[in-house]
Image 1 (cartoon, rainbow, N blue to C red):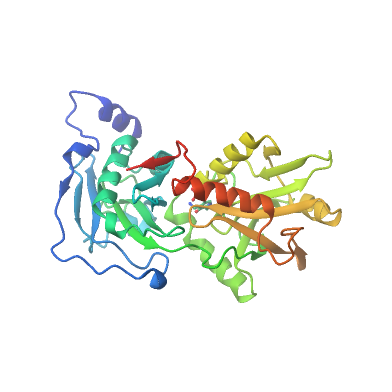
Image 2: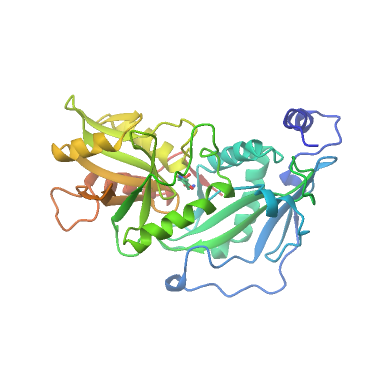
Length: 385
Ligand code: PMP
């Protein structure tokens, strides 16, 4: 049976036969017929896939196999594979961008590799050398270069996925697993500038809870959130505002982290996001926004608990400034309205521009991050391939 400590030890031990991921051993089996590219206007998120995928198999006896880049296609698994029964699955989402000079860039990909490692460990799926996995990913992206759209706002979405494949109905850790990476070209989240969203605050269902797995990016966290999402959509709201606990703490927005900009009771302008207490996914965008806003030295930047009653009070007293969700897909999504226990709360957008769909700080964060991602603002976060 898989043992995390043993695997960690063995993966670093020189004379062990158990192997770790090694990018120098990547084998490439090219596809014989390349697919036509999808015109930018026809791109629907997550529906089209590139010509190749990366596959790395693992078993408890030998460790990780040689990584193989092969034509994108079906994988064959026994129906008894544990992924189908007990959700042994974790994944990541990051993007490759093409800058004005045609160079390929990734945004803080080391963060995604570390988060996948953490999610894998939480599920007792095999862990791996994150730097080596990133090097394998880079080889795949270089090979799929023609699929990375050149237009600003467009990108190649990359989905590393790890599944437990042991054929067994007995619940336990997996002795077999597969790590694969697939890629999908995608367009901008909002085709015509920002589009502020309406949220339905959700407390009957909860996304995550103390001691649960809300801080891991595992498939099992996502499927139960679809029904509440559909219920919100039926009432005319684009996303759920996930609340938690007796005092309706704000946790996340749909599959995004949540930020509130307000003038606090001490008269300071404060950018608040809930703390990483185990119920929140540690978003790469969240971390980037916190770091950027701290370097500006213009706002108080806080990772702290924030409740709906604090937001309602700030709104009533004219102190609520902006709210937005953050994530790789959209960078930031402005929030314009929240239905909270039957009341529709209007969140301010831009006080100086009534026709605007985003407040000034939301806009500045979006412009800065996008500038870094597309290599227009030099920054160590943007990794050139
Ligand atoms: N929260 C959840 C639940 C998510 O699925 C995501 C998307 N990965 C995020 C937040 C945002 O994370 P990131 O900024 O790394 O995309």
